[in-house]
Image (cartoon, rainbow, N blue to C red):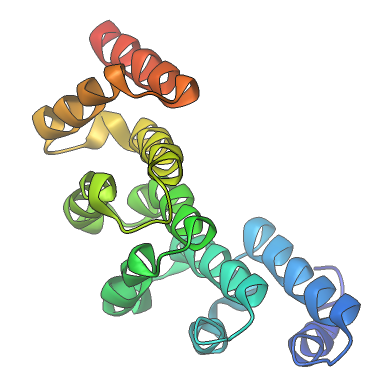
Length: 189
């Protein structure tokens, strides 16, 4: 961040055959996107193209970086990308779906005009195709965390609360606990 000229090296590094350089570059770009998203915003298309990568680690980094760039997305590039981004919920991979869900609260705060659509996607996680019911229960817990980030602004609070209440019977202790904490927070308001 102190040497913007190094950015080009990081972009090149993502294509490296050397895994240390490839993943180190992707991680560095993710860090830049967290701390100074404006530095990378003009390269949004680069990260959108990375979503098509056969390499899951690059795809996961791209999902995180794109979510971070929503904080400075004055041209509404993410709004046009919404369907594609949330389509990764249905890829059948818990980790990929987790990156989408984990970033949803942050995106909802950056893009209030999309909160309704984000809420709609998060409410569907009970039916996302995943390898096991345990995977689904983990993803549901992550959805509760995402709702927690923007719960004060949720339009469809009744449906969110109904979703979270269903998780009071979730067989995964951590997810059940997240539901209990969320409902205490909502009731405290």
